Amino acid sequence: MLLHALLVVVIPNIKFDKIKMPEILTVDLVKLPEPPPPAPAPVQAPQEVVKPKIEPKIKQEPKPKPVVKPLPTPVVEQQESVAEPPPVQTPEVIAVAPKPEAAAPVQTVPAPAPVPVKQEPPPVTNQADIENARNKYGNSLWGAISKHKKYPKIAAMRNWQGEAIVELELDGNGKLKSKKIIQSSGHDVLDRQALEMVEKALPFPAPPDVLHGTNFTITVPVPFKLE
Image 1 (cartoon, one colour):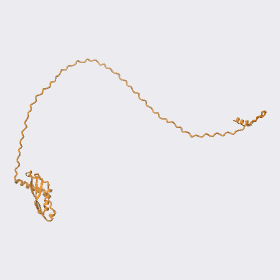
Image 2 (image 1 turned 90 degrees about the vertical axis):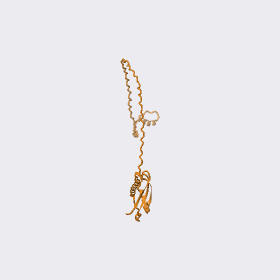
Image 3 (image 1 turned 180 degrees about the vertical axis):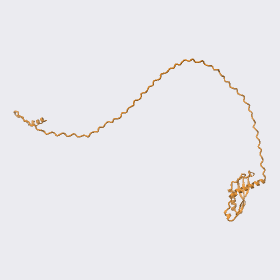
Image 4 (image 1 turned 60 degrees about the horizontal axis):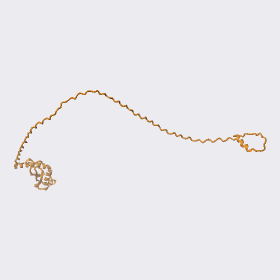
């Protein structure tokens, strides 16, 4: 570099004159200024190194090899020749159907003749028995009717008294068919009370056997007296 610098300085000052004897040149070395130090290279940020993802390798289990079972060797049995016994002849059995036995004669027994039922004649009842049974049944009816006796207040306040006679028509079972006053007590309030007592006493008790089967009438006196 120094030589180049000298050449640059000297060459422009060279003049081609007459040839002169070469002179002794004195060369003074000039110290050139040192070039400035190079600028530091820019510091680059370290780049992240992306590591490639390593996928785990799936180990494939080796497939089991099919086991080939050896075929069994056929065993050949040697059958000994055995002499068969001669067939036994069985005697033939002939089945004979049994002869049907003679059916025994069926004896028909005649049905017994129906025994005629003797109908007993109904008991003979006279009028006295009927009247006696009617009076007894009338007393039992009065016992059932008297349980519902109630003196009207207005009759008690006015001191009304009397006896109402009620006629009852009944069937053979003692069921009431009709009722009416055949003899008044003299006061309508007492007559109505007598009929109301009859209605409250229903149903009546069963009549006696003598009165069964036919309709009949009974008169029942209903007295009203203040004590």
